[in-house]
View 1 (cartoon, rainbow, N blue to C red):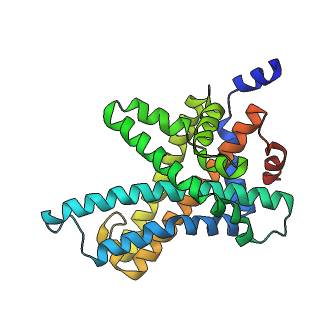
View 2: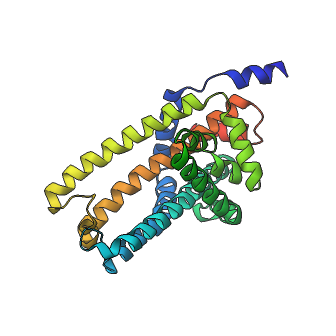
Length: 264
């Protein structure tokens, strides 16, 4: 018991987690990119729909309300898909650790099977963050950090909704500061990558990637999709690597030994 308590007090190291995230992408690029593509596809289709329907807030004030509702729906959808993506990558990595010949589509089965858990859990996660940010800001940040690995927990440990939140809170206990720093590192990397891509896009396509008009053109839309695909791949790989670091630190995860082989 003393050993477990000691393990719980160990800090997680940000450098190795970042390194493992990049290693996971490098060693399993088709898998990571495939799951990332599934993760971003609904949001990209929604972006196309907004442009097709002409819901662009800079044109007329009458579109602000539907755009705001679409933006809220997009945020909720993004939360669901990001949670699914992180869980699916963890499940896929587990399967590959056991059998390197496992078919990619077969390894998605665990995440798909747990969609009835993932969807409400992700929605509750997003609502909790939003409520915390609206009222006191800090509780929203804490909620985002405490429950940041519910996707991997649901798929890897086959928990229910409440159990997933409890388990994620247990895993991140005493290391919220490190998880926060890791989140900053993720945002700095992704933000820098998007900024460089935006500059390149403006040179080649005469449009800014942040502009809704960017979506209405085929080539810029595909370029923007590739940028989002790359940042999403990094995000879900980092979430998977964080989960692995947390269960190794905690020492009682049912998948610890199998997950440790992902980076070999």
